[in-house]
Image (tube, rainbow, N blue to C red; front, side):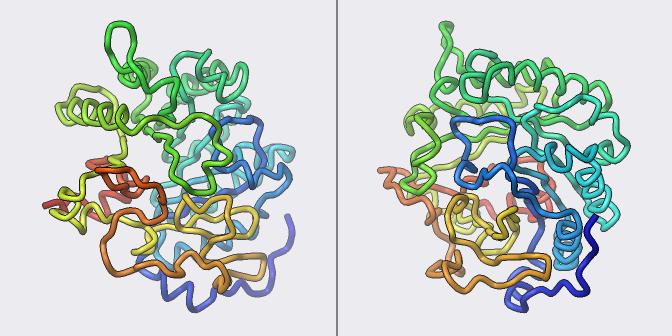
Length: 365
């Protein structure tokens, strides 16, 4: 391990913006990945050789914890590739280091393409959650998007993780091939939920894919879904979730409301991590962002290296941003007609630590 620098400083502007506001850190610890998913939003930054050095990662986590962060998500690329050539020691050190620093909740987002032996490691078992990404319960649909045999390997590791007592979640993109209905009229997403129940996961998280007239539209392939079908799907799944129909927890984003609905409860629907500094996305290329819709662009709030965190003065993502008034999502540029877009992370009634800490549901009118 490389020796630590003598001093790791944090720009006062960064401290002022995030102190006692930040709740969670998304650490994109490596840009290496062993899949080539069609819909990957991280494609422009997949250099396949960049990672955050272990000592820098731990220094970042220490400073962000001091500012108020309590939750850490380890992402990539594929985070299980971080330090894989060194027996995963750097990854395990970061997991243990985060828990030692006092992070209440440490989770890892994975595509599931790793040796099952990793699940046996003591430090890996310190994770509070492992989330596996699969994009259909049909291997043919999943593998067409994510890569041949990726479904079977992910499923093997999901089952092993469940058997070992891990809290296991599944994340699923809602795309053209799984947004429709089966021959009996049931939404394929509902059968995906039942699949999640069957294999023993605790929660399933959905990410619908839309064209938003933003840069990422250029590299996520022909995977986007129609607004009309999504609105119908959301209402049906939301009602069944609220009625307690499912044995597994379902996190599903609202994504759109009418202008009238928004005006009736502006503070609630105006949820925006950028405006209240609730999170940071720390990338292996040295950028620190807040909004995931900025991934793949130069827009960021800060940058970092082994010396510290520095405020970004050019192409700062706060530039021109209305930080005081609750608004619909302004980083989505498309006109969606009679409905307006909400933050992609706005997932009503979700049983998630930060959502609960914020007490966001109390804002609903």
